Image (cartoon, rainbow, N blue to C red; front, side, top):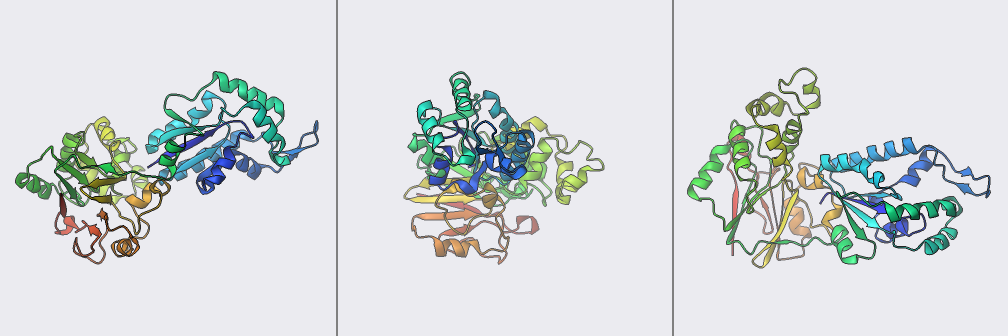
Length: 394
């Protein structure tokens, strides 16, 4: 989830062809396409060729980064088709990647020889032709400048690693545990959680998966967050991200000042968090909260015994062919709140060994186990409902 793929290579090295052949155009922002949005083709007076102007690059990259930020905010698979010949070219992505918790990869085409690149460049359409002197300068930089350490470099021919990024999603193996326990929404209601662990003591041989929405609406947000801070680093605890964790992340990043003065309320769209939850959390160490938020997962896909389980906050109506191509926001917030995703998942699911578990929405107030292969753990605990807990045993 949340991967940013940066293409690297000279014009004519095959980057755009690779994107097209892998069906990744809808996920790609291309610098040349944006250049043509700002200005039409211009004539090179030496060769007479029509070419793409490079004169608007400051505007081009500002717009591209803005568009990339919009996509990252939704947790989409993101690809940037550009040459990235200088080490500093990668620095423009670092802040965005950190803010939205993206892993950054470089798909490297620099091992395509200069001669091959020149030959393929000659065969490109006139508009995309690049003077050979520019190609030669790029290859000189490729030899001396490399991507920075926060970027993982993958060669274009490393099919197995690339496939794992854009196609396959291998479930984690939870068979080392005796049991798996999945918790529904907590919403600031610590007492039911405390009650569960008083009768079922925490066990290192059990995996605990929480579906998100830990805060808001209840009156024990402080106690819930304290429990999370005490336990989130344990290897058998998985904290998924719910839609209410957005406010906790912004609070931890100090997007709201300590006194929550005028103007801040306009930015915080949640009056519940603004008026109540943040007041309970005002004394927490913001650094520790940021570290906690960085550990949130978007989904937990695991195998246990002979079955596979897809756990997310909002749930989905189908098992996607490529989880990487689904925006994280779809798993965290969903599309329409009233969608009958449990019914849809069971109708669309062709794998008898695949099960879904989620919380977040339960418009029809169905029982947790109404459907055979999709379990709903939302019961409006903050309004007097239960904390739904699903225990999976071998």
